[in-house]
Length: 420
Image 1: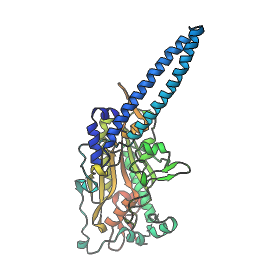
Image 2: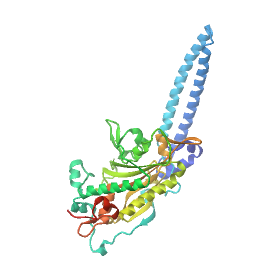
Image 3: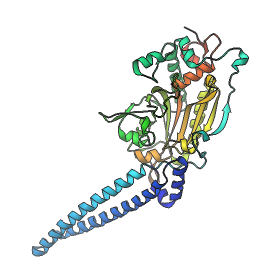
Image 4: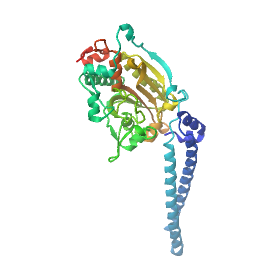
């Protein structure tokens, strides 16, 4: 959640942030009214409670009719205190509900606009010219069949659309990608983590995934658990209600991820680009707020290093304000070149969430001035299905084989994936 001090001192900044995100700026004024009502309710309650405490102290010294009068007054005051406490709780609940609807304050450097208004920051690598090489590239589904690496038909038979099996070299390629990602992250100072993928509502809400993103979350209603769409959720909640030290803390979480993909009917129905279940290695950092911008650049560089090792052409984009999640003030995506689509497609992203998630999750650090919320940042090191798509399509050969990127060869034990 945002800092209420900013809301009170500069509400126009919050209104503008809501507006460029495509969210309701009127919530800001509603929250200002609710915040004032809350503070007034707290003041009224505390004044009555102080009066009650003073009256209680006078009971012991009083006698006779005076004592009876004091006890009667105390009874009446107790009822007023109870009512004031109830009004305070109601006012606080109303203000908190509105506060949870306000998104993080946008970075002034982020492009303004919708999904298509991103800014391309750089292109890395040159797409292959398959025409010059004398053959038409196959898409990842066809290559997956040739290699017996991907089975979408049986995935649909067993679980429905947007599910798949990775078999033989496909499964081995996942393990190679995960092992290389974890080895790279460990070398960079991240602690490897295998987190739970079922979380309580507090964890999901605390990371900002029960607002605008709720439609894509699988909810097990009977047990009130949520299936995570990214290990960002359990990693962020790992230090919930704690005071941490030795910042920065960096974790690399490997987990399965689950997404309903609501609102994507008819999009990416072929293959494994947009699926309901996939595995991913996610980087997550807790740091001091003043270090967040530099940490964001580091996360992006680690993602670029991984992409360079995969020997795949890609571009880096600065995501526009209307396409950001509730928690992020700025987000960079890396999009890999997909030859058969003649387009760049997102394979990783990294977001700076400043103190927004930490305030919700009550994660703090201590300095000479007291305790303060930490900053949190996340970055995908590798999302397995889309990286497999990029590798198969970019490194395919005319005979249906696929050249293995040099960085993965020690983990696969081969330099080429051969047709089955």
